[in-house]
Length: 545
Image (cartoon, rainbow, N blue to C red; front, top):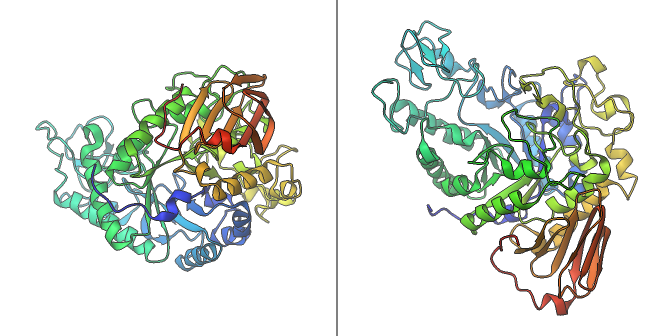
């Protein structure tokens, strides 16, 4: 494993909050969220207890893929505000103890980027991957300029792949350039320039989109890893308090490559994101038809199991040791919200009790803290539809602040909104849940506070899985017992030596001697007696039983 500077100390205690900027808060009434809107709502985040925000791409873009098609990396998109507005947001967040990360699209640009427009008319430009053959290979897109041939996209056809070279030569494909060719070197230098620009304005780091996609035909991602290692070494020297998070989905590969943390995602690695999907994916919302059907653990049927997640986490965390972190999201802009399909509001507290006490960095997707719903049946918006059952718009609807017009998101007419507000008459709001101390919002706040003030419940505390079933029972730091029962039916477990247990946050769970009983959708976090705690010692993570 390459030796990097240790991660900044603040990262171990990070509670992430992902903001989809066009849907969070609109300050100027144009129907699209913006920087000033986010700034006006920072007190909500500070009250909640989150300390690190990452924003989906907010660079200049034609927005055919919601900003993941960048045409100017050094300037903010006018619909969100100016660079100065972003700097003010970062400053206001910092005053509240909140760091801000940007989303870096490293592997491709928009076909409207000046780099691509130049390359489309210059056969000697190698910033992108081009073939001059009359019959280009499958996957290549015909040149839109005077340059003959075609280019390789990275995702949608309008997102040409930046050329970071090929890991393997192939005489039959003469367009392949090595990773040390002029074009790939220029792109690596550009990444440093972009990061340096934004970090100089006070940003705390980046979440990197499609981080594994740089070098092509790269078995094991070996050459791609070398690029990130080079950038990490540069970052360690130039911006040592900054972090890199990867959209990779395989922490045991991405963290040794140079990232400070990686997310468990709905894709990635040899199991194609099984770890995350085995927790949350209930076959509704965003569904890739290529996924094997499975029963997720957080399902009322009780057919799912926590084992796929626990085993994947154990494998990754054992590989990483103290070199980096794994982040567990509630959802994201590409994946279904927790409140999706048949999952109801009464099932969400147990999900948060699990997420906020497991030894990962929790990432809360905006609105999940109040149980916002995945909204089905929306039209395609900025490339949201990826398949017949995969419409990402349902996870991108406006934040629900109050019962006013447009749920308090915007003063615009409803038909001008970026996406429609959830039409349900029972949709949750921040205002209503702030006023109700029994709400999900208050529970999430209490769980974050408990985690923040209890190091054993954080990212570095040990975990021993006592029962990988219903209920899921695990011990944090040798002292804190966590019980999660996501199914509808009652479940129990007998474990000798539990002893006295003081509930810190519990609903529907009882510990009576060695017997643990959990009602349906129940959760409990208990402080064991000193006598019981003395029989357990924090140490390395243990595999599930």
